[in-house]
Image (tube, rainbow, N blue to C red):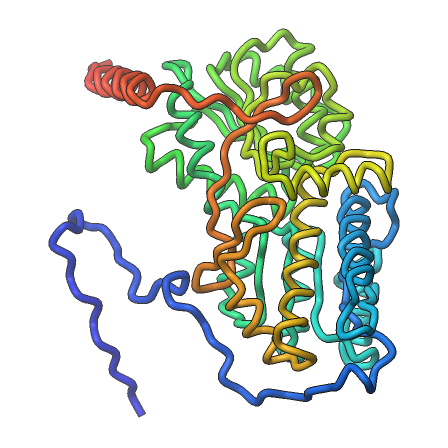
Length: 416
């Protein structure tokens, strides 16, 4: 049998040669239409179990703060009565090899421990792995820190991401790069891991839309200690700006190497520059870098200030954005369980229906794929802390962008 699909209508405003998608999944919310599943009574349980896919070691460099924030949210929920008098409990599944033993532990947790939802993982790849499990198990998964937009593009109705994706954060950063970058152009330094590559891809799309070209793009091995040759190549090009797409450790190392090499141009980066590890390792070299500011406790709501104080009081350190979004993810899931009861399909529907929902990180608004659409502001490092970047006057930004574009046009018309 041949299935005939209607052609997408032609748009009168479409540019010649432009491609319009037949179906934009982000504009059409995916619903779950299967069986409702098991419903349990609180009286029949000793505790309400929530899966946690991530390391439970507070000293873990990437997952430590995420775990502590999840614990804090659970403790506060239990102090306020839990679920009808029964405590919530985090059930951990993790391994240093998530795709090996970690996956087995997660599957065992889902099918043997009677959990009602999952919070995790700690990056894009581990979230993809957890998503494969919940797709078959019909279990809600809330990702607290993955910015990989392809996770939600799998079009799984059980998948939600509270952290704005790279496709959302790349636009504001690209606009600032376009405003500041002069005729000497832009160089991108990208690590070879999955998340860095995805961020670079989204940023290049946004830069192309703003007519910002690249002088060069270098890809380096994640965690590589030697950066002298790479920095020497950048200094030889003498770009007006450098973008670093990497994790917090690699970003800090390269920022330090560039400043040690007397590079005085602009340095931009991904949201990883707002993590506590970057602030500690970059130290004074991080001053003035520009990046998407996903959480700013000093300028956010009263609840954000209260969360930061509670986190600092309990753990002796200030939370970064990964902790704040994890705290919101767990609280949102708890609110959904309290609203829907102990029914997996009902919990999924409740999570989808809670938005717009306001947490310590701001408003959570889902698109059709369960991804948070809230666009972040930009930040910089001042006195060792992430701060909001002052917004330039609109007219000034437009004028400078126009001048630069006209300059590029004149250069492109010169016959060699």
